[in-house]
Image 1: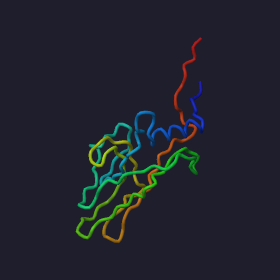
Image 2: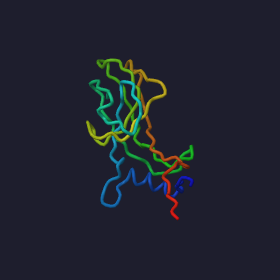
Image 3: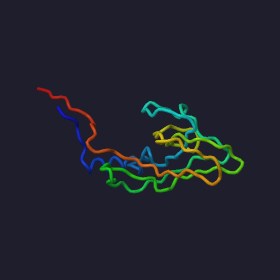
Image 4: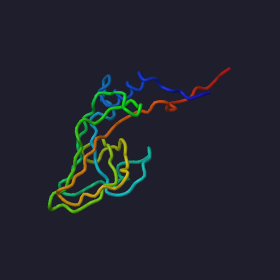
Length: 153
């Protein structure tokens, strides 16, 4: 038996439910904060916040994410973009550092890890004239195997 493939309507609803307040409760991604990692890591659904080495220079802080409206993205996935540009730089007194990836957490400090992403190439923050800007995307790809059914009888 083939996989369950969700329709565009269902995928749009999944994104919307994840980023917006649903009936009686906030979506799991609503109110997410974006943070940076300063050491290599491997993405995994089993990852927890304590597995990551979070940036810690004196002027660093996680940035709140405000999600845009769910829409069909250019790659064919249903998703939403974080509409608040995530940007970090270092002050003249901060040490240079390499950024290996970013993560989403449910709190400004500590909290639960919601997701991770690795940069294609580590990004150096070496002086006040360079900075890192991110636009995180939450997406559900089409034609994903969302489950199977048992054939009875």
